Length: 274
Image (cartoon, rainbow, N blue to C red; front, side):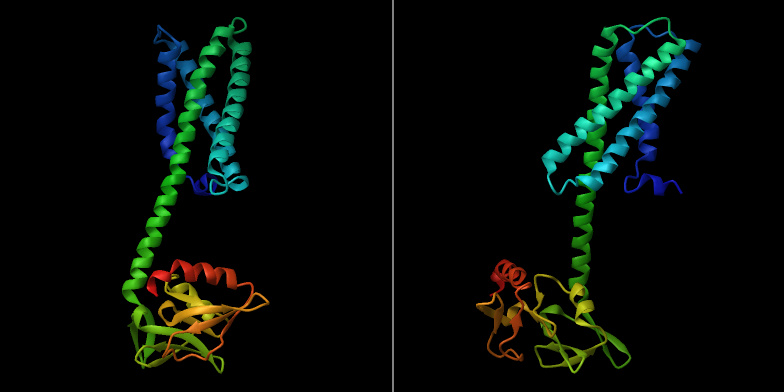
């Protein structure tokens, strides 16, 4: 159930274990002599509770920034704003709660030296926490790319599934010329002129194909890159596809003005297959 509160960061166990370590290090950095008595234990657990709250506040800022300012839009700006805001929120909270606890249980205002030293330590830990979450982002990106590569590898190894009678067969992508619509029925056409009826629309077929091999030209055709020779520009921004010799398609297939820029980029990026 706790996952709905954690969102995409599965970090609960990490900080349950990490915060006591941080708090212990802070104690040794702050106090030259530590008396192991009830006062030390009490203040230690109070500081630990404050640390968990401070971490959660910083985490909320990071999750909010994930929605408002994704890393992909401006990486350097996002990191700078994240460090600034998390440090501001956490430092303000720690100053407030420290003064509150000291007013209730202390014996006078805290000296300025306490803040100049401890706020610097807090800032270092804020940087550490930010580093962890930035690391989460890059790990997530790496894992996504890895998953896509594995998915693409599996896709290429299986090919496209077609029905032959009651049996499913895989047609290798390099054997496919393209897909087309004829009388509201979808067909797959192979190099050896075999034609298979596909019980799916082109909208559903397109996501199942390797992007660098196939392009959806219009409502009627998805064509393999090897069968596209080039294109001609029209005055109105549309394109006319030039198929290679022997391509079993109707000539003068038009690509709309809205799709034309995407087709040009795809055609240039896959020029190595020409």
